[in-house]
Each structure stands twice: as structure tokens, then as C-alpha cells.
Image (cartoon, rainbow over all chains, first blue to last red; front, side):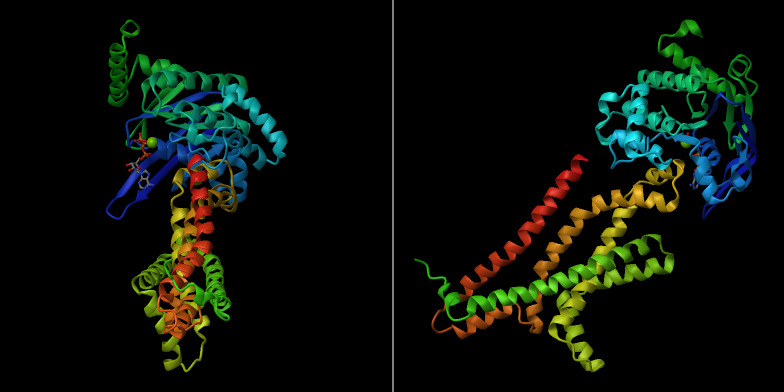
Length: 257
Length: 226
Ligand SMILES: Nc1ncnc2c1ncn2[C@@H]1O[C@H](COP(=O)(O)OP(=O)(O)OP(=O)(O)O)[C@@H](O)[C@H]1O
Ligand SMILES: [Mg+2]
């Protein structure tokens, strides 16, 4: 579904060059939940933003659903982006629109009439369990509720891929759990491929099928989650796993570890 | 009863002259407000999107206009142009030019501020939804900017209406000017006229500015909820 080849992205700052992504290649199968984990500054956000070309890579190719995005013209890219939804850490809901209009907006853009778009949007509210908040404005919602609106908006466009950049990092553990369950249900029910960026091992453990460990702009380890967990080869992966075990001990879940 | 000299108003055509003066002031306000809103919006958008040179130019323009007292600008335009270029422009035209220069500068700053205050995430969300740059502006950025802008713009309009009384200084027959003429003419018969007349002028301006600033308040309140 997604194939990335030799992706490179360097930011040129006045004082220095930041090599955010250096030569990354991987692919994600249809219907998979693919996790990318790494410490802060590893280049996770930059990588995922390159997948829908919010950030234009310096070199390399990004293929999504059989199209090479990096070679498309602006107009074609806009079309392809409608098949790729994105969920942001900061939610990025459209503030001047009600919750319902946020969700119906991508449908209207896709050419549906307002009334139809709203009806369908209401269905998606039900999916994420927010039907009673349809008339509220984003500013009036809690973080978890906002993220559910963002998810409803993401699936409304009937995308083939959803990209999540730290979708749960601003949420408490319990709400994180609900959002993760919601994402994995969407993955199963709609068959949407999900790429999920996180710095929390827990997120990977709970819903991802495979994982890539990112360090200093490079993938240092990649494979099925169970394998990477059982036999981490690199220091970066080991560190993350140790960290996760400590978390579990701390939260009284030591028996799993 | 305290004699405010209000009877002077009822003498002859004085009240009519005063209202006529208010009308001239309003005409100046309306023209310069209209020009400022249109030009200011255009310049504000250009300023926000423009290159370095454009931005520097706008910044200098704004600073100069802000530092110069409007009175100085008025004299500059009114007397300056006739001296240097030999143009004879009317006081009313000079006022409109100066107030438009000022209003345009302030308005463009407000517009630029409103657009830059829209968080980067909104642009990204729009792009990620597959909106073109034009659609993003039209459906996401500008509506939000307009909401932030509205109360500020209304506030600017009220300030412009108030400041129009400055025009007096270069001799446009305007409310204060008329008032002064009336006061002069009646100095002997009604020495208190000055106070009374200024009171009347105060109420006249209040009548014009109050609805505008009420509107601004309402907009702000509404914005706080949304
Ligand atoms: N727009 C930008 N301009 C310049 N440098 C940038 C930009 N965006 C990211 N960087 C730099 O690229 C590097 C990778 O950043 P990125 O945001 O991808 O990290 P991350 O893994 O998502 O970190 P975090 O977990 O903190 O979100 C960092 O050193 C960052 O400073
Ligand atoms: Mg990040």
C-alpha cells in the first residue's frame, strides 16, 4: 500500500543542516497497522509528513496505492491526498466549524451536497461515540473528544490510509486506550491501512502489527512487533523495551513483564 | 437653571450649520474608512505573503504613519502639496488622503495580524484534507481570520470617526469649526455657549460612535463563544 524508497529530508537552518530523515526505505502492506517509534527528534514527524508530502522530501520516492506521489503535479497530489487522512497530535480541527461540520467538510470537498454530507458525518459520529456533541465547537471539547472528532474526520473521506502523528501523546493513559481501540476497530472494519507515529512503546504493543525503530533519521530496526520485542538487536530498541518494562512495573502490571 | 448657552443653537440656522458640519466630518470618515478597509485588506494580504522587500516597505510605511501625529500629516498634505507641487487641494480632500493613509496602514496591520494568528496546524489540516491553496484560504484560513478581524476593524472605524474632528485645524468646515464660529459670533450675548456647544458635539459624536462600538462588543462576545 505504501512504499518509501531512499527518502531524504534535510532542513537547512542558518547555522547548521539538520538531517531529519536520511535514506529511509520501507513498505507497509494493505490493511496493516505499521508503527514508527523513536525518541524525540529522531525524525518521526518529518518522516510521516513526507508520506503525504506536507513536507517535500529532498530525494527519494513515496508510493501510495500504486501512485508515486513525489512525481505528481499539485492538482493530482490534492486528489491523492484525499485518500490519505492525517491525525495530528494537536488535533488541528477547523476551529470556526462545529464538530459536525468538521466531519462533513471532507465529504463536501469530495463533492457531496451539504445535507447528504451531514447525514453521513452523523454516522461517523456514531462510530466514534460522539453523536451528542455534533453541534459543539472544537474549543468546547476535551482532548480525547477532539481526537475522536479528528478520527471521525479522518475516516469520513473514506481514505485508504490514515497517518497518525502522536495521536495519543496529549492524552491520559485511559483515554489513550480508548483511542487505540477505536483505531484498531477502524482498521478492521474499514480495512484502512494505518501508519502510526509514537514515542510510547505501549502504543506499538497494543495495536501495531509491525514496527520500525527510528534513530537519528534512520531506521535501525524493523520487523513484526513480536519479533522486535522478543529479540531487540539494537541499543535503541533495547532501550525502548526496558523503558516499557519499567512503565509496566510502575503501573502495577509487572506480571506481564 | 444653569445657562449652558444652548439657546444659541436655536438662534437662526445654527443647529442646521452644526449638523451640516457633522455631515462633512462624517463624509470624510465614510470616504476614508471605505478606502482604508479595501486598501488595507489588500495590502495586509500582500504584506503577509509578500517578499522581504515588500515586508520592509510595509513596515516603514506603518511606522512612519504611526510616529507622525496626524495633525502633522494633515498640515504636510494640505499646505505641503500646495507649496511644493502647486496643487490646490481642498481641506476635505486633504483630510481624506491623510485619514486613508493612516487607516490603510492600521488596517493592513490588523489584516496581517489576523492571518498570521491562524495556527500552522490549520494550514496543514487543510493541505492534508487535499485542499488546494486557494480552497484552504477560502474555506479555512480567511473565515477564521475574518472572525478575529471583525471586532478590531470596527474598533478602528470608531477611532477614525472620532479623529475626524482634527480636521478642524486645516479649516474644513466641520463640527468643531462650526461650533467655534458659533461661539465667536455669540461671545457677547451668550458667554457660556462654548461649554454647551461642546457638550452637544460630544453627544453628536457619541450618537455616531456608540452604535459602532456596541457592534464591536457584540462581535467580540460572539467570538469568545465560537
Ligand atoms: N520545519 C523544520 N525546520 C527545521 N528543522 C526542523 C523542522 N522540522 C523538524 N526539524 C528538525 O528535524 C529533526 C527531526 O524532527 P521531527 O519533528 O521529525 O522529530 P520527531 O521524531 O517527530 O520528534 P518528537 O517526538 O519530539 O515529535 C529535529 O532535529 C528538528 O529540529
Ligand atoms: Mg513529532
